[in-house]
Amino acid sequence: MVSVIAQLSSPGPILFEWGPIAIRWYGLLIGLAVICGVSLSSDLAQRRGINPDLISNLAIWLVLAAVPSARLYYVLFNWSYYADNLGAIFAIWQGGLAIHGAILGGILAALLFARWHRISFWQLADLVAPSLILGQAIGRWGNFFNAEAFGGPTNLPWRLYIPPAQRPPGFEQFEFFHPTFLYESLWNLGVFALLMVLFFRSLKAAPPLKGGTLFLVYWVAYSLGRFWIEGLRTDSLMLGPLRVAQIVSLLGIALGLLGLIWLYKFDRPLPDVVSSIKNEPPSSTLPDE
Image 1 (cartoon, one colour):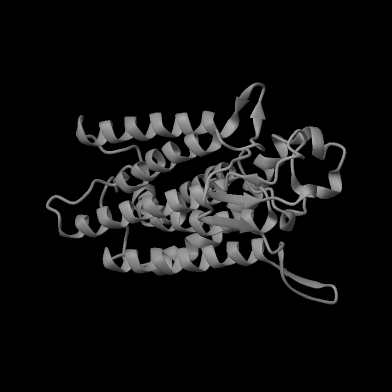
Image 2 (cartoon, one colour):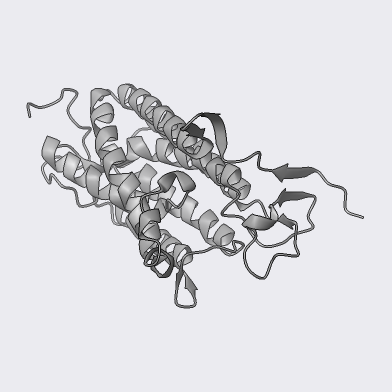
């Protein structure tokens, strides 16, 4: 008989409810992730001698772009459902935000922000990367409270109880499933620790890390874990017979490694939105708008 180390069970998606007002864990955790991310990136910017106000301004752009992009990405790959349930498209409090959609939307917003302020996109990306992976580690717990994004059935000593109403078709007879939200949260915390070690070593290194290094390491490290974990899930977004997240993860690994090779083997800076800046830190003051 297998000894149970941890048996997880969601207490439900709602933290607090008063009449028509409901505070949901999912939204609370997203808000917490944003607050932690802005605080951390502002601190890292200051340590690099960069105006932390840049991060506060950038955060607004990222949130405005990332949330709708994450939802759009999810809806498009679940269109067979949402085509018949148009009213559910905007119900983001029920879950259904795809992190790859959020990242793509955030990258576009950051490129526009960097171009607008005439600063290096890669320097900004390096400052945001640790906050991004930390936010992902926090946000994954929203899946726990919503009892979603879990893996296949398991009898391992660590397992997640899923109520009958939340079990996918074909798995109704199983009670316990892989807590893939936990796997990814722990993996992301490991990536976060790696990025922070690299960041603080770069402050003392001579020469320092080249612009874009932290972001590229983030892409490779996160994608490696996501590719593995996605293979365990029962609710993957699909493109024909292929899992979309695994396709995107493989692309992330390939592009990240190519970028690192470009930086360190060929000793060339990454293309930037402002060619004259290249890898120097952005200005310590905000330009006039």
